[in-house]
Image (cartoon, rainbow, N blue to C red):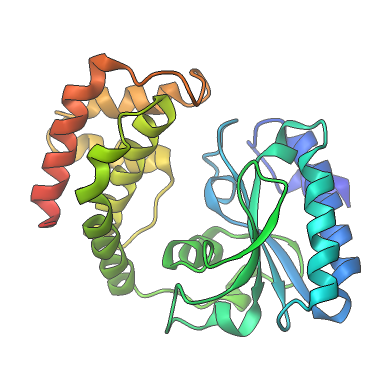
Length: 267
């Protein structure tokens, strides 16, 4: 299976390592889940072709029904083992074990309780983290099937008006709290800027773009005013440590960008 997986990862950094990690994950999950295993998929920036070494390896393993207690314990052991592997990508896995019927539904998004492993974690928990509009959009439009049927058959197309409404809700949630965390370190600085760029792009276009593509789209929106900030935040990915201090040179433009997004979105 490694050769086939590697062929699906065109352009991914350290693709051979990633393919080996994904093959291990999928084979073990299939064995643990048995008849409940429906398929395994990549979404996020890897599926969109814009991943870098700071990206998550966003996965969804789809199940025919809820994971039972015995399976949860076995999956928890699996993710503890994977997280302590030597590959770069074992520390960047992030994903959920999503129930197929719940994933197919566009009503009640955000209410699921699925087994989930966070980026960099070795612990399986229950979360609604991956039960989002954006995950469904990327899975349907760009999802990479590692095992199972095509991603277009496991999740429906999401109408653009739902993407716009979701982006509006996320902007209204994010913008009031940015001053509390967006300047604390280098990771928060770039994460806040690049995710806001994606949100405003989704709000205005009904499309879910990668961080890199969202930054490029937003860079043109205000006549290039924020292009230097956005380009610097893209370039900083992987070039500065997560816990380095935020770059003070960009903080004034960060404030200006946040204000421009708030004004444009009405949040």
